[in-house]
Length: 345
Image 1 (tube, rainbow, N blue to C red):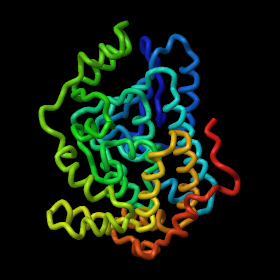
Image 2: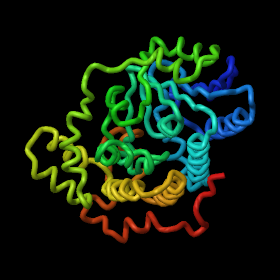
Image 3: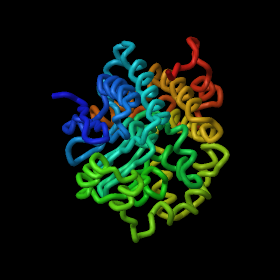
């Protein structure tokens, strides 16, 4: 079975991520195939737009193929670095794409799935959408362009999402700017047909199907508290601010942060702050620096072992506390690579 499917329908090229049993997790062959096909369609005048969707009911795309990355990294093979290099080039291609790139999302969208959706011009989410960037919980950092889009979420919500890995439903995803339109999942098929087979302008087709939530987003309701705590000048300041509070949200948030990799938290904090000042492509180059260092460290492999493989949820982070991760330690992650920065194509 092909892991990713391509078809032409009317005026659109359609990409289907086709690993439903694996929640459509991205593999390197999928990344390469998408990159090649997007370039073909970019130069094909008959293709007016590209639509990407996930097979099955459970997920759009739950991320990258973590097990393959874990095995490759532990074995010291170049696959793990090649994967990130090619994935980041694909993310950049999507961001630069000269035609409408439309993601039809329902179910889980995390990590690599965010990278092949959020950078497109249109992100249509169904009511079953569950968005998250949970990388600090497996000893990594929110990559695939998180350096760029997270600082541009409202207020300090991007920092909150980056550090905690908090999950958003469709209403919150719309508020955060992850979704551009909300369309009930039952209408995705008719929306797809209309996008492909009518001559109506794109926005007109989208507006006919889109709905507007009546409920106030939960994220909007807690944003004043998030902004108050996560505007801190350091990770330690965020921890101290939360510790000084007494609400259930503050207690739960601090408890959640204490389960994450201290190194990942320190790197992610600086990543979000720096990303606010960088253009997209500089963000992607920075992410490749970070990934190259994480793949040679301890916490990614320990996090994957504890959370995904053994499922004991007791990772042995090294260092084990944020106080033991010094400025110089973080600086090493951000330093230029000996071989130069990633060429984005």
